[in-house]
Image (cartoon, rainbow, N blue to C red; front, side):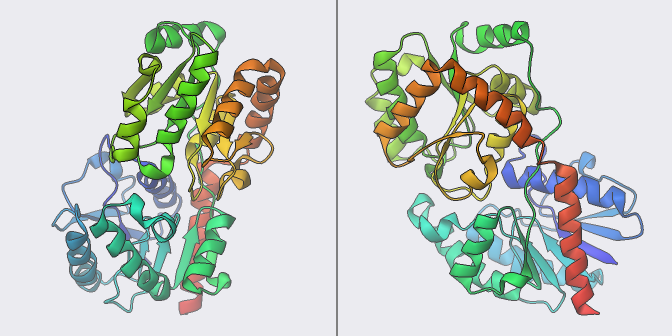
Length: 376
């Protein structure tokens, strides 16, 4: 089989959630299946480290997909042209984008439908593109994979897709994530916060990550508890009006640290040395930072919303993500209850063992095989 793959999110030093999914699954799938050829379709010059095996053939065709108009140009014109030119037998898209201009069977990995439920979280052009084209992609797909049962049911409800066409393939977690010794934790805290204990939040500063409410809740927490900080890890993609207002009105802004993006080892260090992860995102298809924190033995505070209870199970303390008072109460509970933190520490390590990129890659490949079996 000659499988074409959308690899536009394999970007050196810029891997985000879906980019990591693509990297971790494709690196395993290509090496595990030398009997197949993989055509990696890049929209810009690629890093050779993403050419994982001799059976991978990179193909570069612009323009770089940086705007919805360019999405449409690339997927509706370049991709079908490349599929014809290189005689691809199938097309796999780890970010869910497909082309409607081919008869080649296509597998879309649709991670979540946040844009259907919260369109105002995106700039208008992006929201319009996603809400116009993803229903078409869902109909066009010969098969769909998604990262949680929550997302599977959401796709069925929103797009009236036969649930038998959708496979749940949970995300994995990198092996780098593991607990640190107390001495190592002290060194990390000294570097990040001058030695102060801290809560950590991981995720791009996107509205759905709910960081505006979190920092308001932390400010209220800080009124009652001295010497604890909040560390926010992630790129500031959308520093919107809510974030600006929340940050401007903080009385304890000096106890808020923004690190920007961190590499895997630095992120592991930051997570493993934290008092707890505060992950109050109100919409997630999966929520990889939750599992990364659990693997590090770090207690988790999670929103009682969308896929997060499915992923964290009994290994998290939950709160209403839309209620700042409830978030504040949860921060206070985690800070003040050593026994609770100890329970979540052990439960998290046990829960995280269920998730691995090996399982994810095997599940995604099984979805490809189911798609191709229906074509024969």
